[in-house]
Image (tube, rainbow, N blue to C red; front, side, top):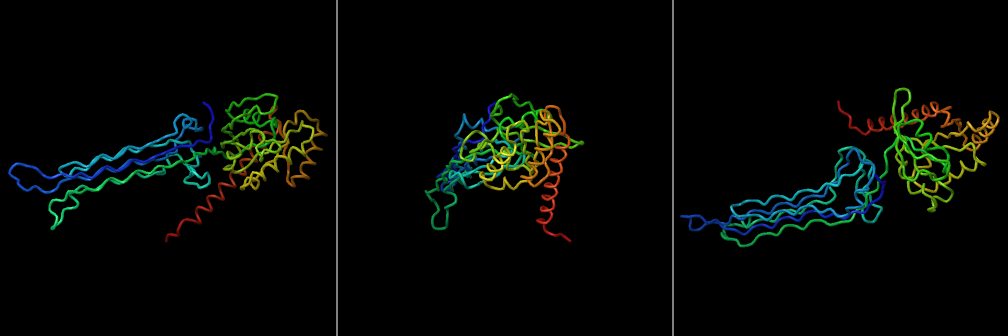
Length: 345
């Protein structure tokens, strides 16, 4: 299945049915009064977050979604049936944005979450509603209200606990393949990864989700390369795993490029907790490992971990460090939710 994380969609809710003009006509009843029923309500356009989807590819082939119109009212005071709703099934993590591409309408973060994007029009009143002491035989009825038509954008941001960042060929896909059941493409050339990959990683009996995005390059925030297109997929992560290729010619420069691009991207991405790891240490001897590690720590101001995704050296320690950051984030969110709840005696 192809990956697509942005789609433009046209929607229209159903119009309400017209009210009916009708009079009671029965044998032996000479002056039957009005009995025109109301029109049915138009259908809504609803978005629902569902399991099992991780792409918006379905919306490439169908961009127009129209709910059903309500049925006009009928005689004998019968209300017309309401129009059927239409449901847009989207992956969890989808943001629904207005046509201006800035206004957030809804953020679909939970399975089963629903939001009405366009309400159907109300049905019109039949002439039964207009009967009065001075107008015993009204011949007027209301038309149904028109539906709402609008254009929206769907933007998918994958929901993961940890996000992998680094230059192309830093070993992100190798790490994901070594620690999860994900099978990303792995090769010895840049931009092997062209779309985000998700993997469920386990350590010490606990599991969390890791997202691998295409590698960033210098100038990514200005549109160069592929990584800037997918940075939104790690915005929701609790922690970033920054992999630095120990076998490159200048690991310090590699680290600084990624930090600069994260800061240029904006938002709170650059402020997220980061676990910095010197990767591919299987290609270095002990003296080289220690030297590069110390130089990186001078730049980061924080401890730098050592790892090899190929030989699995240091992998478990890195996973434990990620899990600690994720647990800290979850604890903070729990405390915040408790503070927001009203006190009950």
